[in-house]
Image (cartoon, rainbow, N blue to C red; front, side, top):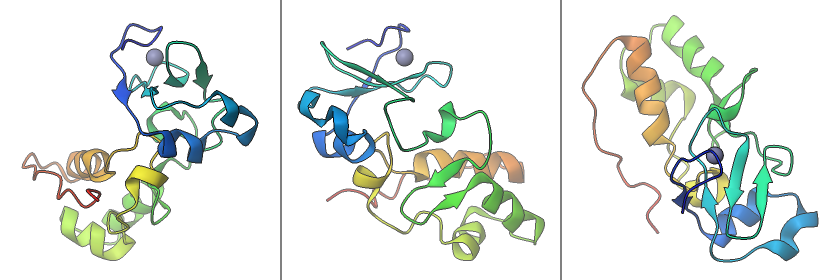
Length: 145
Ligand SMILES: [Zn+2]
């Protein structure tokens, strides 16, 4: 299903939407919600009837945020700023950043990450861009239940 911005949404579980949405909107929840992955779009979740924007969603969606701090890993509360700091202090690989910050080893992304997906999909690229590397591992599927 497409968002009003024209971008294809990602199907999300009801438990994911419910965890991030303000409780006053819970009565509108269904199993048919999608997440809008467009960083330029304020819509976070939508189905055929309801649209929830960053105003109705209490969790900050990292890549829709303009200010800082920007959350990267929701399980361990690690931000972009934490990652930049770890690299400043000498981390030279994704693994070293993971070790220093604890990023990515929470395993509860389906609940904690507003996209319902593993945060490694996002932070790995972010760290590698910072480190100037191109090699990319597959997501470890740490969030598969
Ligand atoms: Zn959108």
